[in-house]
Length: 163
Image (cartoon, rainbow, N blue to C red; front, side, top):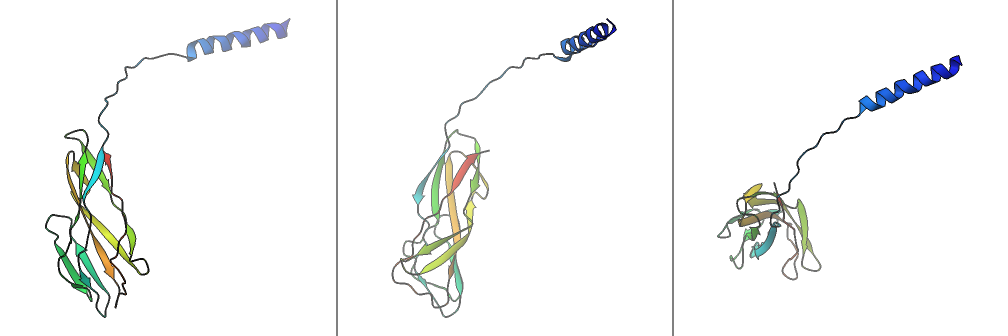
């Protein structure tokens, strides 16, 4: 009998605790739908004509209109040709800001020989406002006596995400 009384006392104390241990709250929720952000290519990134020299060099394309480029070391700039910074159009919810992600390094090739392109930069630099232009530049690493059989080409990706 004593055991039954103790068991009932223990069970009733659990029942009281569990009845007092829970509570509920409510909250409002909402969502704002916006147009998906998009990015499209207007101009490809092109370093133009470059003459390789007997020493290692670079060609730097700045990220803005007018194909501003410079060369260091053994690389010599040839005719401007079709030199151009990359130009993209970013669209989506007007007035929103977005973050820009650029590649670290890519390899371009003429089908046989390769060259590294790195140090990608953009204007705006890291955050832009929708809608608008996004310019991309980079640095081509030109080898000493760089061998080539055709124009070098490759691809790279630019990613934009709403902030």
